[in-house]
Amino acid sequence: MLSLSEFVAEYGELLFEGTLSTLVMLVVPTIIAYVIGIALGVVLYLTAPGSLRPKPVFNGILGWIVNILRSFPFIVLMIAIIPLTRILMGTISGIAGVIPPLVFSIAPFVSRTVEQSLSEIPRASVEAVESCGASVPCIVFHALLPETLPSLIRGAALTLISTLGYIAMAGAFGAGGLGDIAIRYGYYRYQTEVMIAAVVIIVVIVQVIQSVCDLLARKVDHRMANR
Image 1 (tube, rainbow, N blue to C red):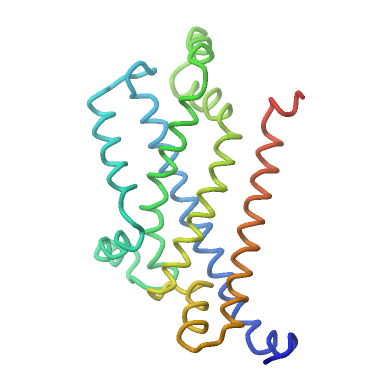
Image 2 (image 1 turned 90 degrees about the vertical axis):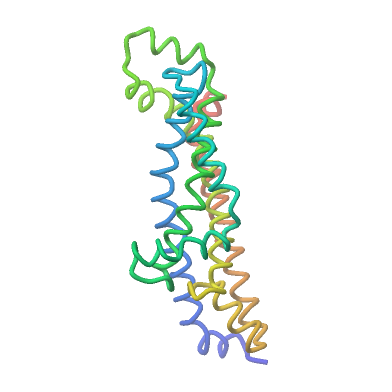
């Protein structure tokens, strides 16, 4: 049994690099997925029946596509789009190889979260802005999205934590990060202390994500600020 100092000396650099890789795989695909997901969510909201620009047929087809992508388990999706991943990234392993499947998994979830958040805005509030002569882009960027910001931030916590789980699973397929370390050292080499350390770091990341998102949501929520 290694002492703490011995453990840090032997595995500290490995765990640090794994943590850094995990954070890169967490942040980069999530940002890309949010850009795509917010755009899709806004389009789904705007084209829904009774919304600002109703297009039921288009909305139904787009919603159907989003639902299909959401229904794929991450591991299945990761394998299914290997040819596309190779074309886009030039590799199917490491950090680069896991970005496309993560984006494809996260973006549909984000789009539905955005659509639901926008749908919760009272119709009267939207009509009041529209009656002032505001264009649709102006309504979206200056009224709808700012109003849903607290909900979007809370949704981001769920998205990031779910993505962290996907990254841990992707470690079994050569993606690297803390999931890879936990499997490679904890399972294959029976070094339980390394696996426990990797899991503890993941738990800490989850707690930080949740705490930061809760704090940000409270700060931007004008309803709580007025209490």
